[in-house]
Image (cartoon, rainbow, N blue to C red; front, top):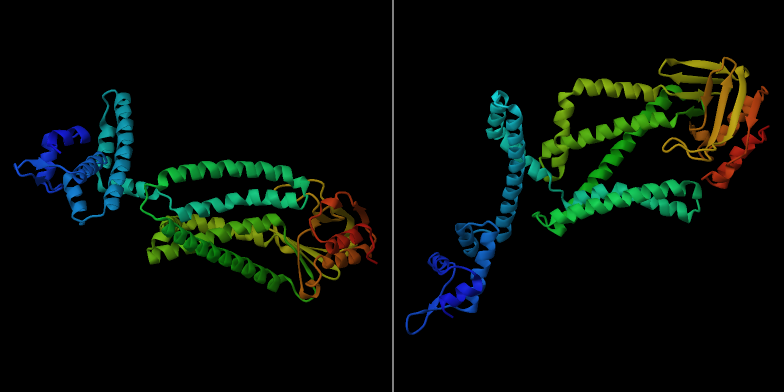
Length: 429
């Protein structure tokens, strides 16, 4: 095949074809008349060269790939990184052009901007932004897991015929599905430009899952430690109920998660491993604002700790942030008891059908014994401590306002519902 035929097939000029031959990218045999004879293999190689040139590779880079000195994939990933950086720089240039237009000849502040753009620090920042914008498969799966929660809850409520929560669960699952679809669509479009293989992504996910388990263990340990301190200080032999509002436990959760992230960030800083890279910035940020975080966390711990009540054989003591020393009342100071099942739900605070037991004293102060912890004496039968509390209270014959409405919404075993109903029907003699 003559060179003019090759030029027609490949779309390359005769000059370019000879240039590639001179560089050793193709080897062309000659016939008996000493004319070049191009083969199908030569045409395939020229088309590949043309393709790689369109990708942005230089002649020298193609030579290095052909000589096996460089990997084609690595070369192309480098080109993609350069293109991402160029796109970012173009966006900055557009913004700078608009700033020049708006400046109307007053360019003093823009000179400083130009100096910043030329600095090594800015270039490092650009490289970091491009690198961090690439989410691995493992991280994408990990970020998707929380969004599966509403969807699983919807099917759980459907299987249990819990129709009261099904509507809200359906709305949240629909929102989660939309977010998941958009997130994975965006991820799959960009994932093909990353160096990570599918296997590497799965391994990364496994490491992140282990990291998450480590954080959950740490969080549970933090809760247990907090509980042990409280019970050892206030739950003496005579005390058999400690009541802690859910809102206090949610406040405590904030501190626990914060401590877990801090530990993970510290580990990542020490190990300098890729899996911890996204957390590495947390530790320096905490360290820089340590006084602010210390004050905030101490306040949260204080609000969480002093927000409970203890019940003994003849006394109820309420602890609050305003009265950390405790406010004591005897049973004969109880004026009224309200008990029954909640007729409405508040997300993350209470569910429809939750049992409530509110004590109102003669000074109009009140305390709820809805959420309780107990001593070993009542561990075998949950909520039986409330039955005992009700028996002690009702010995002084305070007014009891009770109702068994909404009991059909209780999401607990019959044993516990029977405890609640015995209190409501005043059967604890």
